[in-house]
Length: 273
Length: 168
Image (cartoon, rainbow over all chains, first blue to last red; front, side):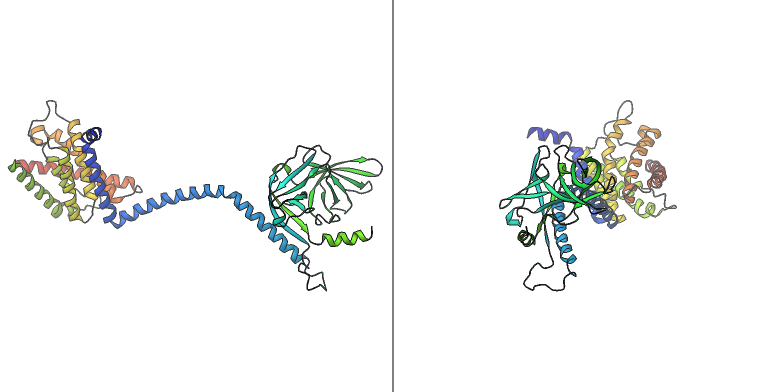
C-alpha cells in the first residue's frame, strides 16, 4: 500500500496528465464525427487483419476435417458416376432389383495403421462391417490400387497391402490390353512385378498398367502404375517392373470398393468349373 | 494572493476574447491560424504546482473547444503544453535560477529567454493541435508547414502582447 502511495506521489503529475489527455481524447473521438470515423476505421482495419491471421491459422488446423469431408464426397460422387454409367445399357431390368444400375459401392476410409517394411504388409482402416466394409473388398488410394480387405471387425478392418507377397492381382497393359498377374517381389515399396505378358507383345517404358476386372474384386480400369523396366524371364514371358502409382509410405485416405454383384458372378462361375 | 488570482482571471478572459473574436478570424490561405490563448499557460507563476497547472490547462483548452466547436482538440493540445512547461522551464532556467514569486516574464529574464521559452511550448502545442485536427499522417509535410507558419505568427503576437502587457 505504501509503495502504491509512493508511486502515486512520485508520478502524480504524469498520472494527472494521462487522465486529462484521456478525457480529451475521449471528447475528441466521440464529439467529432470525422475523428470518430478515423478511429473506427483504424481499429477495424487492425482487427480485420488480426481476424484474417486467426482464420488462416484455424483453417490450417481444419485441413484434416476438410480432407475427410472431401474423401467422403469423392466416394459419394463415385457412387453416382457408377449409377449413371450403367444407365443406358439395359433394356430390361427387374423392378425389385434395388441396385440395378449400380455395380460398385464406394466408401471412404482412413488408414490408421500401415507398414511397408515387412514382406507381408497389412494396413488397418477405421471402418468396419458396421460401415458397410466387408472381406474381399478392394481398397484404392486416390486413383491407384492399394490392397484388399482381408478381415473386418465392427468398426475396423484389415487390408492386405499390395506390398504383400501373397497379394496377386490380375493386371493388364492399357495400350494393348494384354493381361498378366501382378505381385510384389518384396524388394522396394514402390515397385511391383507384372508377369505372364507374352514376348511378342510390344510396349514401352511408361506404359500404363491397370486392373482388368476379372477378379470380381477390383473394378475394371483402376490404375496400378507405369512400366519402368522389363526383362525376359523363362521361356516366352516378360517380367515387367511396374512403378506403383500409390505411395504406400503416405497412405492416408483410401476408398473401399465393394462389388455388389460379386456373389452372383462367382456363383455362376462356380457352376462351370 | 487574491489580487493575483483576479489578475490572472482578467488575463484569461482577455486572452480568450482576443483569441475568439480576433485571431480565430485570421485565416491567411489556410496555413496561418495563430493561437495566442496559450500565452495564458506561459504566463502562470513559475512555482505553480504541476497538478494545478495541468487542471488549468485542461480548463483553458476546454473553454477554447467550446468556442471553436471542436471537443477535445484544444484540450489535449493545451494539457500537453501544460505538461511540458515545467520541463521547458527547467531546461532553459537562468544561471541564478528563478526568482521566488516571479512570473515568467520577458522583462525579468530577457527577450531571448522568453523567445526560446515561448517557441518551445508554442511549437509543441501547435504540433499536437494541428496533427490532431488532421488526424492522419497522409499530408504530413503540409501539416508540418502549417504548424511552423502558425507557430511563427503565434510567437510574434505573443511577444507583441507581452510588450502591451508591460505597457499597461
